[in-house]
Amino acid sequence: MSRGRLRFSVLLLLTLALSAPARAAEAVPGDLPQLFAHVEEYRLDNGLLFLLLPRPSAPQVSARLLVKAGNADSPDGASGLAHMFEHMAFKGTTAMGTDDAAAEAALLDSVAVLGEALRRAVTATPPADSAAVAAAREAVVAAEARADALADPMDFFHLMERFTTMYNASTGKDYTIYDASFPPSGLEAWALLESERQQDPVYRQFYAELEVVKEERRQRTDDNPEGAAWEKMQALAYGEHPYADPTVGYMAELETLTPRQAADFHARHYVPGNMVGALVGNFDPADARRLIKAYFGDIPAGPLPPPLPPPTIATDGPRRAVHRQGEERQLIMAFSGVEPGSPERALADVMAELLARDRTSALVKRLDLEAGVARNVYAYPDGGCKRERGLFVIEVDVMPEHDNLEAEALVWEELRRLQEQPVSAETLAALARVMRKDFIFGLQRSEDIAELLVKSEAGTGDWRNAYGRVADYAEATPASIRALARTLFTPERATVVHLEPADDDAKGGRP
Image (cartoon, rainbow, N blue to C red; front, side, top):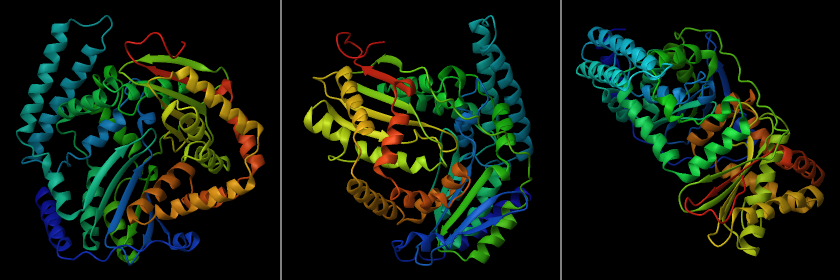
């Protein structure tokens, strides 16, 4: 489709999308099996799966497109590449965001060539002369400026803003997800724009955007003591597994990323069979199927990338480190976790609630209310990993007058109590009821249902596990909780990081 025809089509669809008023507020979902019984699987010939859940009472439609490509899928030495590509997905396409597609393409090719030269200079062994690196960097910046003269990278943003009430994207350890919500009349505009950017990305303003990503790195990690300690914990816990690398990337590796690497990453991972989409809200299923086929059906099928290797369960712990930065103390304890689709995954959720849900939970009660050691206590059952075994993480913000060693000793005491003293069946039954209510409350918005569906399908291979796991909460028994505690919470599976104030060597963590 030519740029003129494409832009005319987009503007026409946007005009139609803006003509329909919003509907009334969404109804709270009722019985879970009844709600999810209306989910329809629609798979295109190219392998792309969409999950469709019409909700006639919803005021809008929420769309999610998940790509099983997160930072763990980035090549060795290119951490942050998946996140960098996500940024590129908002720069438009070869047909959107430029005044002269052919001329811009030639200039962007020049940027890519110069970018590879810069990468070689930065990674040279022995190191290249600093003047040579600076000259290579200046050449890239100058070439990108010439290409920018033909571009309007905000064009895609403006088109999306005209018909959506929300659009965003995020990159995790093992997935990237593209979000949008819009009135019912905006479905075709979304299908056109989303499909175009997925199959025809352009690496416009790559190096300018790389500076934005570097600043994210500084804010999240380099200048953030908690982020830096978390990064150290993951590196220790995962070892050589790609889950060890930060999603935002290491600064030294960000310096070497290139447009060609991003293009190769897209070609390898952004294939239909590696994607899962969902539409939830006020739409007609027949229209949705027609539009999905029309706009996503011509994306070429490609070979699936190899699956991630499973992380090795730690057996040589506890692995320990101290990170000194900032003014606060924090304790991070991580344990090799459970498989995402296993029956133990629901038990891990229950375990996290038993430990750190509220003031009645074991760790909160002991460290905060009784000992006064902690300001906040958290427990995360998967460490943010969806496709493979993650980490069960316990995080404690330690009060200034106490130290990490004291907090760690109390955590170990409570974990041993879980291993030795069974939790009552009444406590587990009451907790399962509360967790089920929380789950249902979290499904009031179509966007939350859509995200739940795609993450469950991508992470466990079956979207039905999204609500099946909730039913499993009620199956937790004193014996099963105690057995999982004995399996998970051992020194051999543990990684422990103490965040200590930068100027305090007297208290806290031992190396």
